[in-house]
Image (cartoon, rainbow, N blue to C red; front, side):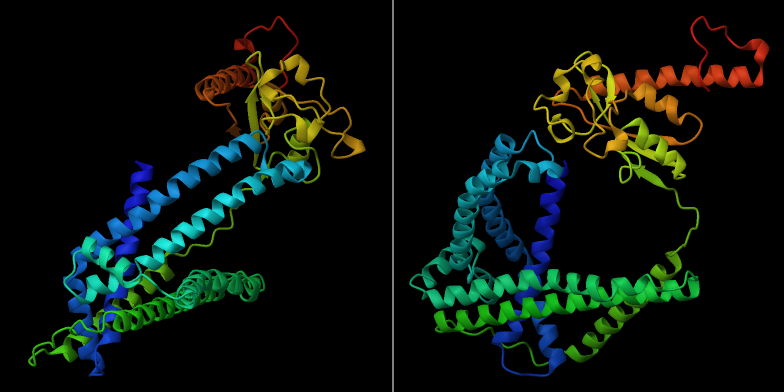
Length: 435
């Protein structure tokens, strides 16, 4: 369902983009006229072709996705073969393996780029043919291939360069905003009267600039498509002129006023939805992993000293079904041992030193169990448990974590009973519980 929803969302996005392009094509190929009349005519004519545009999206974008699928499957297989047992944090420790993966993947990426570019160029005129003529999507694709046959390389290079610029501009604008304007927000005083208007101006400016750049890119692409269409299919008649009694001015002003009212209401809603809260929760990632080895009792202790409200930890199952704190699938990054975590028992895992790599002060730091972590943070902080199961081990690990939490709940109940009603506390045979 998730994949289906993503495909539907992608399809609707491209339908809107094609609709915009169709309207701009109508403007580009028509003689100069009253701006409002021209805009309304373009909107009306492109909307009438919306079903055909949707069909073109289904064929054109769907074919590109089908073309991408085998390359993605091959890349996924290569990733699993070369890097599947590693985590991104240790790729630098295994640089040859990473380069092997890149060396195998690069030809696939180049082959896909070549195939996708060829298909994009051959079908470039399909949208003008659907928008400006009464061609069906399939007819437009076939005719586009015929019209673009024998193109010069310079034309194809110009088309692909423009496409690359259109894709890159929003990313460049995002980087520019992040470098120039985002740091300024840190200097603002923490007062609603200043923060809310400043944040609203920042977001509004970013959205408007991004939309303007995107609009310019789409307009440039539509203009290029229109020029190529008029040169290669110039014998086709231009669209018929609209009726003389078309009253475009009033409707255009009404549409523009409606857009402004909608934008104002949206800005008012955003302004009133801001709520600055001072009750911020501090969460320590893998314990205080910047000053102590990750997922160790030392990191948990440091988190408590730092005042963390919650501590995030990663857990895996040992070969004897014990829940232990560890992030990676392999022991390589922290210990230098090439064996996998799931192949070792709890007793074997307890012999590993996972602290020396961090610093001499943490020599002989062992891999703790979840029960030890719960005991260490009892009554002082909460735990956020991120389970890291092997494929097919998901339910087993979840059940083991739940069993450990149930045992901890029993211990905490005994602690509560001992502290509040000593006479009702359950007698303990073993050593007293640490509360």
